[in-house]
Image 1 (cartoon, rainbow, N blue to C red):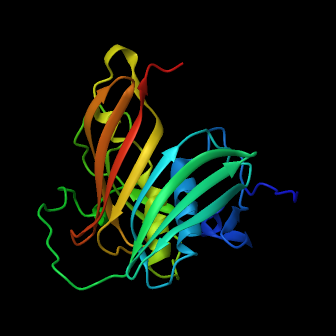
Image 2 (image 1 turned 45 degrees about the horizontal axis):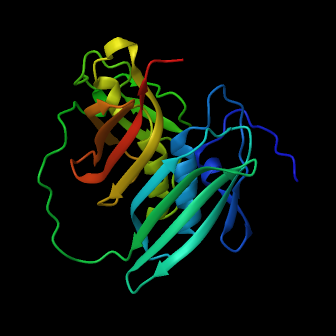
Length: 265
């Protein structure tokens, strides 16, 4: 097996450039040292990139649903096996299994669709937030090649931001699939459940499952507003939803996630 040397500071494009080993089998070869388990947004974005490479270029992701099964290691390469469940006239369905050290760490179902003309209606406006140009820069942890700005927060007691502007600092020369992958990379950061009062010392923990719906194209090298809303915690789990809007207020994507909600060990 080849040896992969960790790099000090990869870019998001490095992470999303996968090695094709054979038909429907890919490997992420950019590795780096990190004192935490592999970031969930990275493995989900790489899985979507692998799935997207197996569909026709005119078919774009409209949804993904993933389950985090084991902790991954950023210092190890991840292998992605894609299963071509169906190719219809306008939709393609794919499943992806992410493997490290011979064990499945993540699996995902993704659906791709040929864009078509039709009604375009948005019921709710974007959350209220000052323009990013007037806000001070902040750093969102664990994200490479991302700039961010922090507007006033809706949950004063939240440990982590639940509303923030973000954009990729790398030029993204590819088509909409690349931007969807970068959006997926961003979508797992922070936690909406951090806005829930931490009764008895419990707190938001690792992601359990994650879903993204892509409604409209969004350039991720331009500002987008991410907003996370807590809904409930019970039985050691927390559940929240989220939205990603473009700077002009168009709803680009919706997020749903369930996380652990326990006392820290």
